[in-house]
Image (tube, rainbow, N blue to C red; front, top):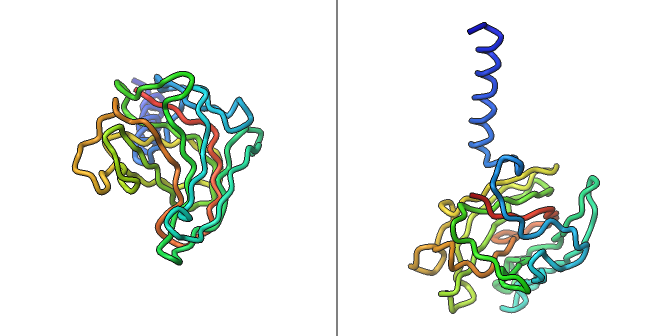
Length: 199
């Protein structure tokens, strides 16, 4: 084997390792089911369900947020923006999408979520809710960083932590997911270009 070929293989291995360590994956290399690619241009996803905005106002908080349907660097996206406040026991803003719509989608047989995001270098959460959850504060949660450029982020189900529930996460039972700015006072500005389930 020639020295140039060996060097090239080493570079390929290094890049693959870095991609795995950061959770950044190419959509083209995944067997994925797209939940939303923003082709509608409005609040509707591919299955006919609509994105919804939630804030801590439901529990007396004063965080403010908006969703907009935007184009960033030539890509259609949903933009979550606003200010998260910890006053009045608040501390979150969220956009969420049901997997049940005109077309019901099941996460059974998939390994996790892929998100195409463009953010403001802040940390955000993804929260999952299942059919077994009865209380609004229960969820399965993980965090991710929002790079200031378009990136695809992998969020495997094994990475999600149960929050105020003892029931293990069953992907087949997931009925809703949310993208959440939570836990600290900061300005949210996150664009979501595509959401998919991957195998």
